[in-house]
Image (cartoon, rainbow over all chains, first blue to last red; front, side, top):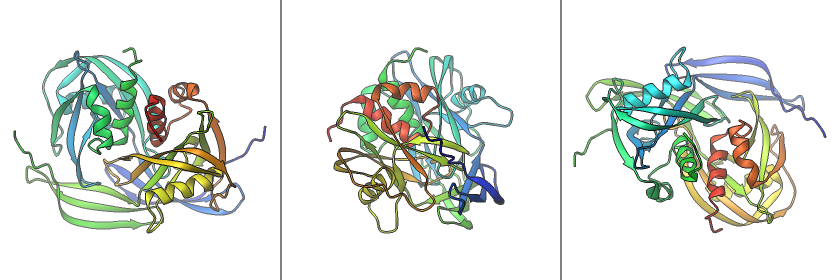
Length: 182
Length: 182
């Protein structure tokens, strides 16, 4: 077996922008063949998302305007990790803020990078059952509508471009497997 | 039915960075309640990715180091759209550059935003069959290893954190449904 050292050692790192949501760095790196390359890198604190399953086996989702693509998107509830917050705490908080529901049975599934070619953002995916309505309390500046989706609608919504957020497609395709135990 | 105007009108837009892979803009926006907000936005040209299925019903994947998460990731072949290139042309080119294979039967599945909270990057997902090996020809500065994955390995690889790239998880979960016709 040949062990290839793929790693790219940082030669220089320059912070171009520090924002509320993300930082941007440009790094000069040493490539495996000793040549040099440049990498544009977004640093993001990561987040958590949840598949909230009702007793009828439907999914609670949210509709919200996203400025980057300039579109209203249909997504699973999700949010950014706050400082010192665990993914589980984050996902419970976001579910309640965005939909008004608490999930009394939550299970972590797996984690993934949204766009590792240029961003270190990692999302932690959960599934939640035994939902109880408390009250909605979106963040100031968040305008969100709650939508209930039936399992049999999901594939058409994805193929028709009505659902086109990566974390949401991952959660829903996983949910459709039907092999989870919460 | 209540029509809610969720849109966020741009008040000012400032380009903070123009790079090879991405641009960063900071936009001041008018929120639905007439208050103002700030949005940090990555502009990206988008890309295409493919699920290459062998005659044995295995998947051809690639391993490559990703500087943003500082990890070697196992991914579906993919790449950025070049100027004037269609998603289909892009995915054929990237498949051959990264794996050495041509797919004689390719079908577009659907498209998705990788991280619409801050980026407009859209990826177009294809599935390809009737693979023919020609020759590998990675871009300068790309160091890529080809890996064959069996369908029965996929869920363990995802849950064990061995596959953690969003586009790859979407493609593989879709493939496992087994209901595509190429």
